[in-house]
Length: 207
Image 1 (cartoon, rainbow, N blue to C red):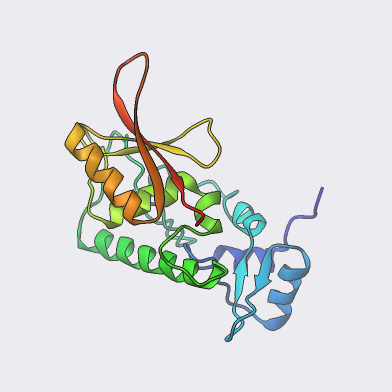
Image 2 (spheres, rainbow, N blue to C red; image 1 turned 30 degrees about the vertical axis):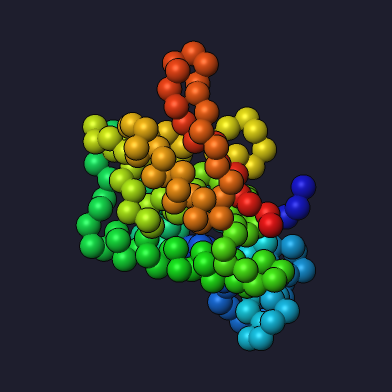
């Protein structure tokens, strides 16, 4: 089993940008993370360092409050996936956080997609399907289901690279599908065999 990162390395990992995974630290710290496979140096100027999927997993081993918008200690942003008992935060501060996270995600697409495309999901999104789909929906203004209020719910599925999106009615479901399609996801509407409820199955588009 690989050795866990040192306390100093862990602080650098925890302080990474919550969406892009961009790292800040001394050259020695960053190179040490690269050698351990926890970070990579981007080939394009200014040659910033970013977390690898393994580095993201290391950061996510820290327990977080469920449905917390941002951990005050680590600053890790979490999109509302829907289905909570408590009302979702929809105030101005939350709107700014969501906007910033979405812009950061678009920048991550530009920097990590081989052709610099921002119109289709990147590797981070394929590794964090539920959060990525929820962020696209929340950034577009769709309300999550929370505190008894109707809204979207995003859930993992047994299918590889696919999430299920539920909404309170057909119109809201179609609106979610349009948003995800515009954000670079392939979508299709399906019916749950047992409940006959309609849902959207969405997966990140690769080309």
